[in-house]
Each structure stands twice: as C-alpha cells, then as structure tokens.
Image (cartoon, rainbow, N blue to C red; front, side):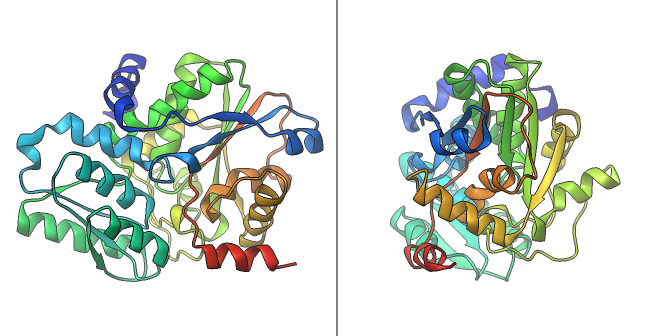
Length: 321
C-alpha cells in the first residue's frame, strides 16, 4: 500500500529514475518573499523534461514492472501532463504508448504527445470519460494500463520531489502543493514529512474541481457532480483511493482558488517571477496571493507543477486586466 511507503522506497525510486529526469531547481521567490514578509521558495517542475512532474512517477512505474509486463505496450488516460510523462517514458524504453485525452485538452499538449510517439485518442469532455476508454483498450489489447495517480509506484516516483526539496530547503516549515488526483502531494508530501516531521502541508485545488476537499469532508474518496475549471492539470472529479488515504493523514488543510485567482497568479509568475506556468501550476501561488494561505513562518516551498501552457492561451491571460 502506498500509505506504507518508506523513506527507503522513495530513495530507491529516486535512484532508479535519476538517469531519466531533470533534478529541477528549488529557487528563492524574491518578489513574493518581499511582498509577504516570508521566505518563499518555488520548486520548478515546469522545467522537468516533459514540462511537468508527472514524468517522475511514470518512469518509476515502467522501470519497476519490468519488460515482460510491457510487451503489449502501455495505455493511459490523461488531461495532458501524465500522458506526456508516460509517452516520454515509453519512448525511452522503446515500447508503444496510447494516450486517451479529453476533447478539451489543449492542442499544444496533444501535439507534444504525438511528437513523443504516442497514439492519441480524443474521448469525452472530462478526464473520467477518457479513463473508461483507456481501461477498455487495456482489456482488449493487453496493453498495461498506467494510472495517473492511484498507484504506489507512481506515488513513490513523485516522492523524489520531496527528497530534492528537503536537500535544497531543509528548514522548510510549510509545503504548498496543488491537488488533482492527489498523486503529487501524496508522494512529495509523504517523503518530505518523513524527513521533517514538523513540516506543515497544505493542498490547493481549483474551486471548480474540489474533489479532494469534498472527499475529506465525507471521509472517503468521492466523485463530485461537475468539474468546471480551465486548469486541466487539476481538473479531476474524484481523487485516487491511495492518495486520499495519504492526504487524509498527511495534509493539514485543503484550500480552493478561483479561476480569477489562478489567472492573477499566472500574470504574477510571468511578470514578477519570470517563469512560465500552466494554469494548474499557478494554484499554489494563487493561494498565497489571495490570502487563502497565510504562512506563520518560513521557509515556505510552493510547487509549480507544470508549464505546458498553450502560447495563445498564455498570451490571452497576460493581456487581461
């Protein structure tokens, strides 16, 4: 069970995936630090090889299962970044990858999936509809279905972020992480917490896709009725069972941010931070700028989870007042 992952498990995963990933920097966020009067750091997963942290869990999964289980290729459902991580990993290992994406997936992510060699299938309007099609393909073709977040090997690979954050900011007092299905926060947060038991962890969801917050309120992983957010990277109607169990015990609070707050954070990150995020990657900064999270002391590390934003979408956000 992912809940029982040990520090040795995270370290083994990191050693396994190190030849294939970037060790992304964790850099001081000077502008925001001065504005808030706290020491703020930003973990730059937008600089990962595929433009998002999802590569970590995917390459760990494929390396862990062994080639005998990959003869039929791999298949998954994704809103973009998980599919990019899987297709990139599959290309490295010279196996076939099929990625089912919602029709709302940005065109730049679809094009990038194809450049990585994936067969791309457009299905449904939301991630959960793409999952049904991907699982059917797995059953019919024998391809290994690779979940986006509900898998211990995926979570262990994501934990490598926590190990890196601890090395760069060992005195981190607060870690703020976006939540979609929960694979990122459960892996990185659990690894960090094992290294620093006094650490506080807060998750951030889009207000229009607050499935983890709803699940925590009900005491079990729950499907929300509607998903309404342009932040496709965290547009998930139900968290994974394994991540939910970890988050329930690990995270102090889950807050939500609006579309406008994420758009404002995007402009702030580009204009003041000189970095390029996708909308889901802005959620953590949005929580600070909006006052949804008020750090009592630093250092604070925020995860910028990805940077695969369509240039035209980015330009449209930047010209908004």
